[in-house]
Image 1 (tube, rainbow, N blue to C red):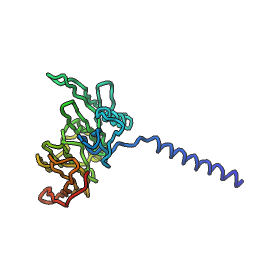
Image 2 (cartoon, one colour; image 1 turned 60 degrees about the vertical axis):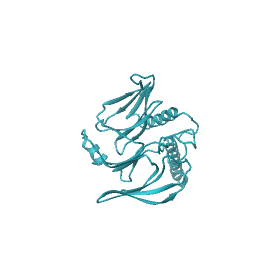
Image 3 (cartoon, rainbow, N blue to C red; image 1 turned 30 degrees about the vertical axis):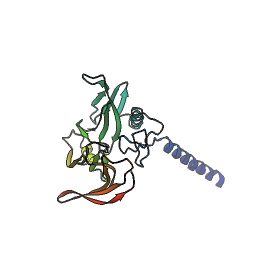
Image 4 (spheres, rainbow, N blue to C red; image 1 turned 135 degrees about the vertical axis):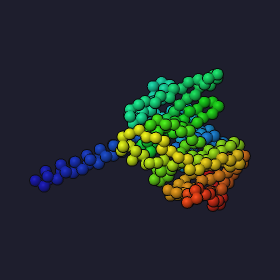
Length: 261
C-alpha cells in the first residue's frame, strides 16, 4: 500500500516540475533596449543594457527593429499586429491605430514604422519612424491614443512614475528630457475610461557640447548618466553626473570620471 500510495505522488511531482520547466522555456526573452544610435565600435546601432549589440548577427538596423517588433507581437498578440507594410496597435477600447510605411511627400525616401516596445505597466507603446535621413521615437498612450515624440528610448524610474530620454549623437546637438506619468497607469486602467494627457515634462536640457548615455536610476528621485564631449573621440573617458529631484526641481552634480560606456 505504501508503494502504491507514494508512487503516484512522486510521478505527479515529477510531472509538475517538467511542465514548469517547459513553461519557462516557452516564454520568449524580452529584449533589453538601451539606445539607438551610431557607433564606431559596432556596425549594429541597437544596444542591450550591457552595451552589447542587440542583434549581433545583423548589420542592418531595419532588420533588427523588425526582429524586436516580431518579438513583442508574439508576446502581446492582442495589443499589436503587422500586416505587410502596416503596423497596428490597439487601444484599451479596442480601437486600432495603424502606422503605414509610405513614401515621404516630394521624396523617393520611405518612412518605415516599427514597434520597439510595449509597456503594459505604463500602458504605452514605443514606436520608431525611420527613413534614410532621420528617425524619431514616439510614445503612444494605449489608453487614449495620444502621441508624444521624445528624444530617445525612455528609461523608467523604479516606481514607473517618471522616465528619462536622452540622445547620444556624436558631433550633433543633444537633448535630455525628464517626464512624469500621472496618475499611475494601473489606477487609470482600473477606471476603464479614456483619459486626458498623462505626461508632464519636468525638466529638459539641450547641449551642442555634450552627449549623454549610460542612464541608470538610483531611486525614484535620482539617476546617474555619463556625459561626453560631442566632438570628442568615441573612446574618450566621460564624466558621471547625478541628477536629483528636490523641492526646487532637478539639480545635476558631477561625480567624477567614468570608464568608456
